[in-house]
Image 1: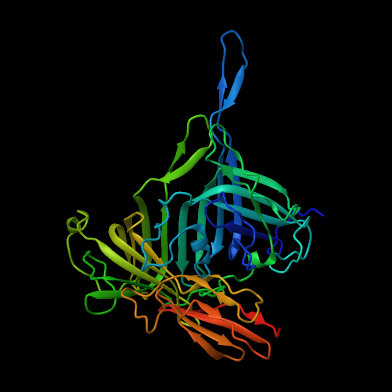
Image 2: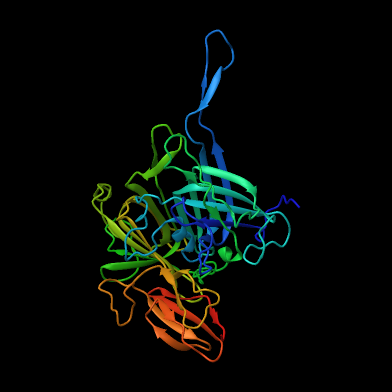
Length: 463
């Protein structure tokens, strides 16, 4: 049965890991190669063909046309920020200790495949449905690259994020699950001559793709309260702008903040192919940061002192969960320069300030993101005694040199448990399941300085 109304229970978006020219089915341990985006609110796709039409003297009509390159395919979506999982699977680095947010943007083969699911009936929730065959229409995009990213947060509302991307190919079909999945939508960009779709690799939809794969469905649960958006910066050297606090570091409770950037890319074409073999990022790119806050005191100075651009600022923005106080996202902006500033005050109200900054971004500097642990590779749902299970996490790691008495060498703290919270392992990513005369349940808690995440449980029956 067709549907003309999109509901949360009927639609979802799944993303593969790079490169796009790779298998998108599940591994031997049952962990999916696709991950569902969290809290998506809307999505849109548009495409345009690049045609060149020929004219001829003596005729009023075009005499021919040719397609000069691949179609321009745009993809955009909006979501409510949850924990950094969306950012990680889109290709942004969420470990500030290892480098900038655009760390991977210049690497080759960083394209992905995106799958937009639309249910054909009622009560088809992707994270619980057992059979996707003939129940979902799939709009699959191949060789997708991130273009623009924008994050907005304000008191009284959740964090909203919008992203726009570009793709090489699009396939629209009903999911039939033929021969263990459907053909991936990626284009073989390495082929000499006109490129063709890849036919020997597939994608597989399972409910695990859309389950809570990171076990932190929302470090930031809802709307912000006063003080939940914190901005920390060095001493202010601009006239009129002042924050609370003492000493060389100042902080402010922010009313609203917006951060964004766009990655310009150039298509790389080989001779004889209308499909590019890559989309190289043009660095650096310009990032922007703007915020509004309550003003306390005002500094003195002359306007010409700061329009010269000599003052650079390093900002740290902490977005905190209103209930737990835990930092759900930390953003570090480097060497930002003020573009404009506004001051406002009224009788009976507080003075307020607004300011906008811009900063250079590359794969090594400009913007750093940090999150609590995100468990991207979970233990299997079931395992046998004497098997070895493990997890893989991303997020902020410990600063080097790492204290290995507290952290694993990868920068995370691991604590393994069984049954009713009985500790069985410490600071190892993996656990060798012991022999037991009774069935057991095992899980691990992964921690960093911003928080902790509990993995999925692994059931180990008695043989």
